[in-house]
Image (tube, rainbow, N blue to C red; front, side, top):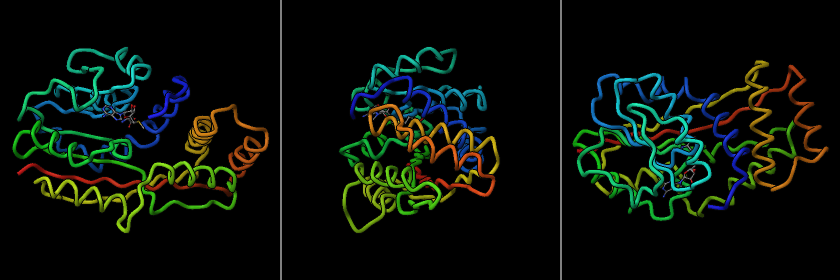
Length: 251
Ligand SMILES: C[S@@+](CC[C@H](N)C(=O)[O-])C[C@H]1O[C@@H](n2cnc3c(N)ncnc32)[C@H](O)[C@@H]1O
């Protein structure tokens, strides 16, 4: 992965957590109420998402793995009892076999070059019956928003630069790869964030600025900022972000 300006990356991850946590918690994480083994968050970034899981399921031991030192430093500031962070790639993390009740990889799988090796690692770390959750942006539903031509073009470009070519959607490829390794596929859930109200739009506006500056590697241009501001202040404009979540279980 390329080296990122940490403050911007940190803010972008905070924003995606704020925008999606409640919906994703309702869709995917309620099984944690009855879970007692550790949950591992692979590629936990700034640890914001894992902190929210800790606040919601305080009885559970959570471990975040992150190999990029700059963003790991933001995560480790949040460390407390039952919320642990390791500066490590998942490949070299010290995880006992058959120890994790759940493994989560959110917005990470596009960055993992050998996903079969990832699946084998996750399978080995998990207790029988453990869950694997892969949450990601649904690139099949990428949309050009007529009110955000500059931003939507840049967003589509930035997502396409991460994708490997193929006939199957990314979600379907992940499903094949994980089941090939022995996981049972429980479900694929597609969901979306619709930014219509003022507060959600304000958060999404900041998110779009972060994405723009991270992708172009320079402060946002006047022209691009004008487009985002006009969208923000027009109550008739909205925008959607589409996501998918795959849930698997170790037999
Ligand atoms: C887009 S961020 C997502 C962060 C977090 N999961 C979230 O949802 O806010 C992806 C993160 O995965 C990390 N990452 C990628 N490959 C990794 C690996 N092999 N081991 C550990 N972390 C990894 C990157 O350094 C980056 O911080």
